[in-house]
Length: 240
Figure 1 (tube, one colour):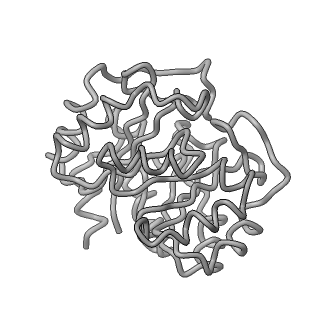
Figure 2: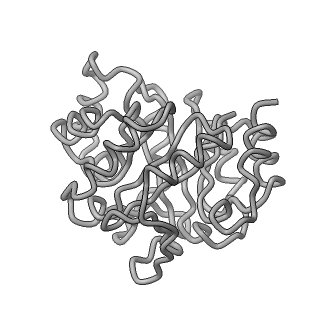
Figure 3: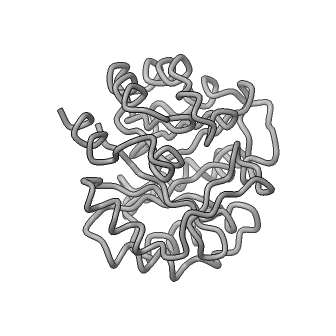
């Protein structure tokens, strides 16, 4: 299992939004590359980056910060936020990311998403993000609810050539409440694709539980930045 520490970008700063609320922001740094180097020095082999500005507006204003991380550390980077078209995927990969994460655009236009995954040059480079609040998936930076559920979309996606599915419980994100293990386990049972858990991971016990149910990865954000999780220990636990 991989530990994927998160770097969420807003106006070039490393931040966290509590429960995805743009009005509840905590700033953890102004040097994304410096933060990324700290994460890699602790043993992380992947970094999970979210462009919060692009998720909200569709404009990739943090491109140079993303590029600097991709070029400045010896780690793989997956990027989400604002990737809504073929050109958006191409632009993200051009920045140097290893994996482009698509969420809202897939839910709003599934036929397009299937065509996207059919492009051979991007095989293994596209992941699906499923972000849910109260059991229903949300889009556009988690601001707009839909009627779709995690299980419904997972069934639809289980035979597609995805590199991973990332599941986030929005209500738990940044709240130190522990991940939604039940829904994550259900998702793992539905699909053979690698499942990455996010939202609420706050301790090494949470990391261990995610590993026990078969997660391929765990995203760690606020718990790392506020000293609740020793990232080096988490990486060791995940690799055993």
